[in-house]
Length: 485
Image 1: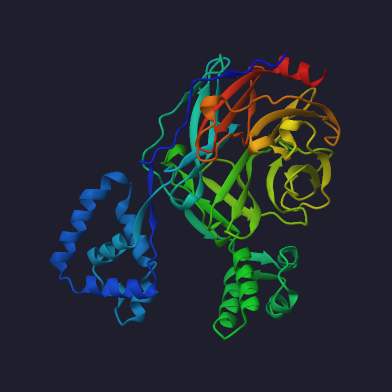
Image 2: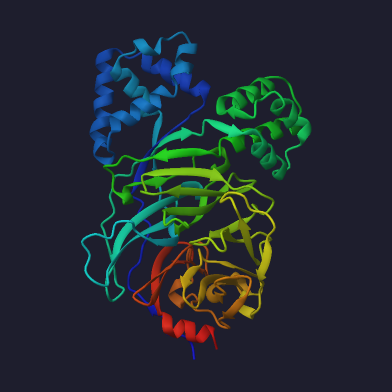
């Protein structure tokens, strides 16, 4: 008999009205021409044009003045280079330049999918049987560019999810680059990325054991300014790509979590941030941190990355290292196993692998623990988020791909002390696309990036054909009994 699954009548659908004000770089030549046209206006005309823009857009964004000024400042050096003293421009003229350097981007115009769910740190003022949770989604907008957005809600004693109305204004964070780097680790990562040593060594040999971000950037810039062959230019771009992959971001504390969005920032993410798997991690000393693994994609290269936060305001982002840090589908266990971090991944695109490591960003020596076994997963098997702890084993939600590239969701149970041991695996999918769920951006797909257990039920948010999202609940007694048959 199939396991009873309760589908909840709650759908998260993309909302194209949720827009963010992003920097718009129109290129140096066109920007110079634009600035010269703005300089031809007298101060009264500048104020008039600026007020028209404010009237139309100030209600759609918080701190629109601050945004315009920040974007205008990005062109300060360019404006000075054409003989115009940027510092002597009136504030109104700077703001007008900034308005032309800004565009609205609809984060969710195409899809809101691949959800993940974690328990919020704040569990105050709740009734018995309730739990406050944070959901993350992969939001996709124009050009299939993916970002991370959030929602907050409360699961009640009947496992019904009551959501907080999302904030309409969306804030972008302040970005700060990592200031210094370990030379030895950086060179190891370049080796993993197959950057030829003949191109990297001349630069790295001149750097100290800990080097500064701008030191490397300047060294690369000087070489790129000369006539060099395409292979060397590509290698140097990849070095810059790597150094840009480390950064911190910080949101305003007065913004609601639904008003925060993590957009692609570094060049390694230029084509999107994909499928963040959030997990609430408890260290041996009881310290708790929210981690998320995600895939950075620049149109050519996949880079697994890790972000961490303790408040959903401040985030640290870094690439993962090691020969196992390749491909997609990384998911961190919520606690250490025998004193080591543990990670799942699908490094060959087909099978599930397990890693152990003393460092949370270093992953080598993968161990294959699962491969396709049943017809509905014959194409590939992978995780649907971090394993969940139960006293009977690690509950692993999986995805399998079968005929017609249909994605289904399955479940496995792994040994607590040795997750290479599979205690049980469902022969049939737990969740398959319903007839009304088959159509979407990518048809015939149900998929998840993270679940949790509440009131002895599995709470499983899932994506509907890469367009929208919903969630189901499953009784844990029924599920564990079936897994152990």
